[in-house]
Amino acid sequence: MNASPSHQPHPAEWTETQGMLPCVERDLPAGRHQFHKEQLMAQIQEDLRTTTRPEAPKRRPNPFLRRTVLLPAAALALAGAVAGAFALTSGAPDDGRTVLATGPALTTTVGVADAKGAPRLLDQISLAAADTSTPAPRKGQYIYIESQVASTYPKSVGDTTTVVSEELHPRRVWNSLDGKDGWLIEPGRTGDEGITLASKVRLAGAYDVLAALPTDPDALLRHIYRESDAARDHEVPRDQAAFVAIGDLLTESYPPAEVSAALYKAAAKIPGVVAVKDAVDAMGRHGVAIAREDATGGERVEWIFDKKTLRFLGERIVVVKSVADSPFKVGTVTFTSAITRRAVVDANKQIPGTAG
Image (tube, rainbow, N blue to C red):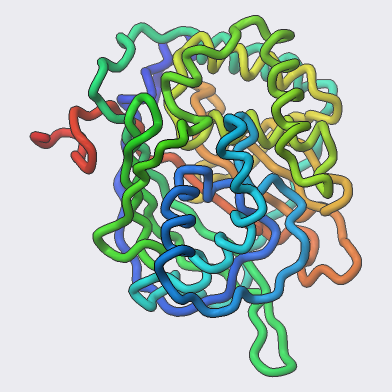
């Protein structure tokens, strides 16, 4: 894409190709859960009530939020069951298949963190995000997000534990504007047909919820801290929880332009946020990154942007510090994603460019 930041295309115009990949059994990935967002909560609860599941595998504490933090109180009441439910639904899909582990762990060169460059870069990203002119979605429409994702995790066979990575695989999500209806297709985790995301609980990343957020960066950041303090796992440092929460709202969602701009400006006010000159998304696209390290977990969350247009490309989590009892070496990519398409469609499960 050759457009300048001042003529950034709307997310509905973003598209790249993707392929379907084979699947085999794996254990629950360690070190990240945030891409499995609260859209799964309703389905998880239904599964737990109606289906006999195998025991969840043991895993090390998750250093990141297990849920998007801007949820209403009704959703937070489910938090106690969510952590175990993720293990059950992710580690043992209904169709008996999981995503293929290819063997050697995904690794990368750890980019140099630049704390002084973060405010300027986030200001530029905010300006680019604000420069959109596409009309807001209409009542009854759905937000469609297509991405490629993969994880790295420890896998034990007998007394031997090795670190392995998944095949890069597609993930497709539909959500109604109010966040109470939708669909998820992620081969190996949902089956080929996918699962419903219908719920009585309004999702934090729903378009209507995002549209109602304050656009003053200071007010927005206060809101995020207040809600994340109430919802976060207390293993997660407070500033890291706020940073992850903003990332969750920017990835598998479709914020209005003014909200996106405010979220980036709010992120610039969080202590410890840095810029990284070179980072690579799941599709191999190089970009610049805004990042923050979880000092307790040794991993750094990176939001990756196109170097020219500053549009959001994807996210990855990189091990930047050795941690006792962790199987991951410095440079391991424990999670990677790339947004390949965002669009507004007229019906649930409608593919962009086709009739509903």
